[in-house]
Each structure stands twice: as C-alpha cells, then as structure tokens.
Image 1 (cartoon, rainbow over the protein chains, first blue to last red):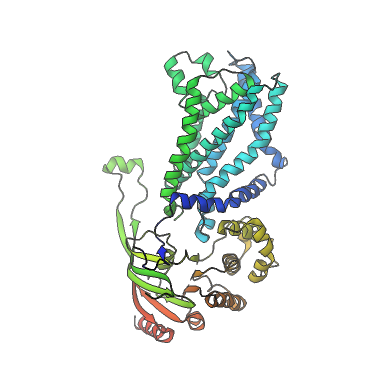
Image 2 (cartoon, each protein chain N blue to C red):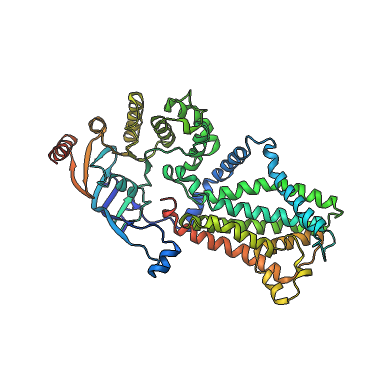
Length: 275
Length: 246
C-alpha cells in the first residue's frame, strides 16, 4: 500500500539490501571507533595491557613449539617448523576470536539495540574490525619472527595481502552467520569451542597435512576447510610450503559465498535481533 | 488527502506469540516426540487507525498492558504487523525507558557511541558534546561509568543524545516520567522545538499532568483498541472515570 501523493512511505517494509548496506556504510565510523574503545577497555587493569594482543598468540606459539616441536616431534615434512607454526597459530587465532566474539555481539549490546535505531550489521562489523585491528601487530611480529627463523622476503610475499583479504571476507561472512544464529540459539556459545577444536586439527596448525595424511580423498577433504585454505596459502607465501589448486579454489569459493550467505541470513532477521 | 499527516496507521494488528514452555531440551523432544513449542497469541493491537499531524503533540494513555509501547514500537516500523499498514514521512525515533548503552563506560563515551549509532560523524558529536552534556544537566557525573547513574539521570542522558539532532517525528515511551522538575522543563522546550519545526511528537505516559501540559490531542488505548481520540480534557476525563469505576 502506498500513499497517492507519494509523501508517505511504508515504514513496515524492511529496507532493500542495497539501501540497508548504504545506510550501514554511512555509519561506518561506528564500526571503527566503538571497537577501538572496547579493545582499549578489554585489557585495562592488566599489567601488560595492550601488549596482550601480541603476547597471547606469541605464548600460544611457544606452547605448541615446546610440545610439538621439541617434546613430541611432529615437524615431519616441514623445513622451517617454527615459521610454519607461527603462521598457522596467528591466522587461526584471528578467525577464532572474530567468530567467538560475534556469537555474543548482539546479546552484549542489548542496551544499545533497544535504545537506538541503527543497522544491526554494524555490531558484527565492529567485532570483526576490532579483532582484525588487534591482529595487525601480531601479524607484524609474526613476519619478523618468520624472517628470524631464516626465511627471506620473496616475490611470494606480495600475494599475502590477497590471502589476508580473502580471510577477512570469510571472517565477515562467518561473523554475520554466527551473530544471527547466536541470538536464537544460545547453545552456540558452548558449541563453538568444540567446533574450533575440530577445525584446529583439521587446519593442520601444528602438523603438515601433506606429510601425515596419505589418503588423497582425505587430503581433498581438507581443502573444504576454509581455515586450512587460508593457512596453507599464507604458508606458501611466507615459509615456502607447497599449495595445490583445490586449496585456492576452496578459499575463493568460501570468501565469496560465506559473506553472501551470512548477509542474507542476518538481513532477513534484522527486525527480530535483540527483540 | 490531508497533506499535514506525518504518520498514518491503518487498521494495525500486532500479535505476539507467548511461549508457555522454555526452549525444549533433548529430554522433552524425545519424551514427547515434538520439538514445537506451545504458545498463546496475545493480541496486543487489534485494528488501530490513527493519523499524526505536523506540529502536533499527541498524548497516548491507557492502562498497563493496553498496548501503548507496542503501538509506539510499531510506529517505528520495527515490529512486524499481522495486518494493516503504517506509513510515514520518515522513520520516527523512539525514546524508551532507558537502559545504559554501555554500563561500564562513562556518560561521555556513551554519548559518542549513541551518537555514532544514530549516524553522526565523530566530528559532529565532538562539536556537540558540550551542548549534549549541558542539556542533560549531568556535567558533574559525565565522566562516571553509566552504571552508577540513577534512572532519572539515564533518562536525561538518553533524551539529550536522541534529540541532539532534532528528529522530525519523536515517540516518547514514559521516558519523561522519571525526570525531575528541571528535566521536565528542558524536555518540554525540546518538544516545542520539534513541533514548531512542523514535526510531531507522541507522548506515551501515565502522568496526566504531562498530557495537560504538552498535548494537543489524546488517544486512549484500551486492550489493543483505540477507545477515544480527541480533546485532552475530555479523553482524560473519560479515561479517569473508567479507571475509577473499575
């Protein structure tokens, strides 16, 4: 139903995807400045403060290297195991943080949702931006550490930004989907750690899939895991591991499909979020 | 068609489903062989039609549970209608009973967050932050965490943020009732600013003094149906008579 003289428009019809996105884009500063504040608040009261954003992944690398590099040696088939481990841990950590925080980004902001009208997509977008910003110093440190392990910058390093953009796109899609599911199914919070434990082993963070998985069928199945695809491509760039075509195809498919699916799911139920 | 209409509600029905049991656990699903939950339908609005005009302050009264909050939320377009239509010149802003935006952060940071969500740029907010603080009257408390605010202080800050850019259509859901005299005076001025700029205000309240003070017309909502719309004095008198007779 529309008004004959066209001055009144239907308020109950949700905005089109294009109008919704342009509205969100107009308010993009929210998704940049608010997570910056939250990050600062996050480690307030700790001795290391902001250093925790790099200390955390660094300690993880240390623990894994102690167990899997020194005590039990899983470095079979890998030339530079420490570099291999650093790349895997840092990239895996990023996706895990984005997804786990997105699961609660709606419920944590109920006060804001109930008092101000704004495109809710800004909340998962803010989570993504915040975690990605916290990841940048860790990435810089990781690259320095990779050089310290004996790698030399090569032309392959130029491909790394493309891999990181693909991961960002994938993370965005995952954040939207998880934010949407997390609002109607609070069991998700309990489930996610287990999902990530599985993904952790299925991404070859601490071992070389090439060297340990001999069945070609299983090896192809690894290419279905987007985090494995990201880590493998990044290792190809930084520590000279090999990469096969399926991994590249898998990464491209995920980084295009998941944002579309995530956005569709999120946009469709916008009105019900936080109600 | 009347050109001064800012929001037009036609035969709006809003139903809520109220679930009688919680999300079924696995035990229930297996024991009863069903995953569907039982629910009752609450008919919160049953065919409400209403026009809101330029330069008008409309009072909205009715008992608890009569559907005032539902009608106001529906007018923002953010509540699915069962049937009927709601047309408007622009999307109204709704000011509800306030919870803190970010309880752990200071009032000043909450102004920034709320303003960004409302679509201000950072520079715009920083340019207006003094004005917002002055209007809220919370200069002494503005750097304290918002969780330490009283409900009246939260309401003041919210009102100040929400009206930092004068909205064309403002819906107020009992947000003024917790304020003190000083805040009432300030909010009355803001409401006058909106209506004198050809905007519209809807004031949902239980405080009849507020109605007499602000409103040009009053709508009385009873059990999801509009019982009367018209002159404040008459409608309020009829409403009070009906509550007295119960």
